[in-house]
Image (cartoon, rainbow, N blue to C red; front, side, top):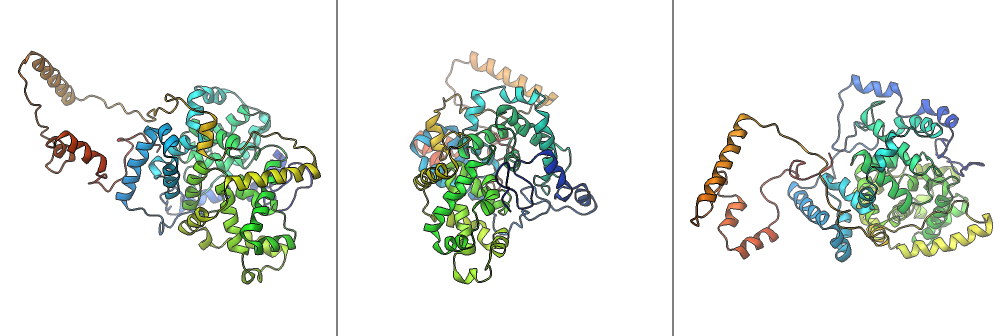
Length: 485
């Protein structure tokens, strides 16, 4: 990366500007990973898709370290379903438990819904019903539409959802980004918003992804995507100041060679590490990020800098600015591995208070050297609890609505069964005697429902509360519970 002398202040490492013009995007379009020649190559080879949808590329998972036992996954799903049913109570009284479960990893089948609840996107959506459809139906500003369209094929070109030009993934991505430019016309579109929106679309429908993007841009990372990128530059200085405490060796080295934080942390922070880490690590970081806020992004950056530049032995190989930047562009895989990185991030003692204290200090310095900020951003919200406290939702806002409704056509057998049920209801009404309910002939002796029928009420309740889900090694299906597919 190198500093841009005019305009927004920074550039990508491949020389595409973060908020570039149509001309600057067109100049580099042919070098994009998502070119037609590369995509067409997939048709001639056998495609191996990992469980996250990647058919190749650096972020394709080998599946070696990210397999959770089915029974553990089933129990976690049941716990998250319980939390989502009473979300306001859990956030008010058991937030530490929610935080711990986010650190353990949100079950894949519920990740999209959990992100929407954590971010407050669910509440925003319910309070602005029809808003996305209204924005989606509008033509949009041609100035931004052209830039967005040129960026579509650059977002995760090795993911099956975005691999096809004009496919449903790219169409939804276009809709979400266009809607945001209409929602915030003064802010418009920034290239770093595209990967953020793409990650959300991998886990939820377009409307939900739009409100998730709104919350990230307005609550979690306010000012990051505004003209001038002042907020990201401030956070770069905050990161550098915190590094002095976390790893003095790395801090001295970067200072010695005058390596500006904006050179190495821009893509990390603006894309929330979605283009940097292995995919399973991205998902774990995002689980914690939605719960705890931007401090997770700071912690990840600090851990990577400490691991790569934190000892004299490691610095022997990078005696210069160029060598140091090359090292930070190719971080060793062991430091990005899920188990290692998650543990390091959890253990690193950098709090919201530390970040806010340093923010005030850097803001004073900025005003002394640059004057007042041109872009007045709203205050940053440090995670789900702060967002909910700032805008308390109603129970109706948190009510879960089915996203998939399947109507099963009636067959002649089902109609006959329906007639029998109606007939049995008539017989029950005419029967004045107290009779015990008939046993269900389809229950097996090992069925928990049958066992609970033979227990006293208190014993049955105890069994339901304390017994973990048993009997199936499969994850909860979308037919049993409302999940995003």
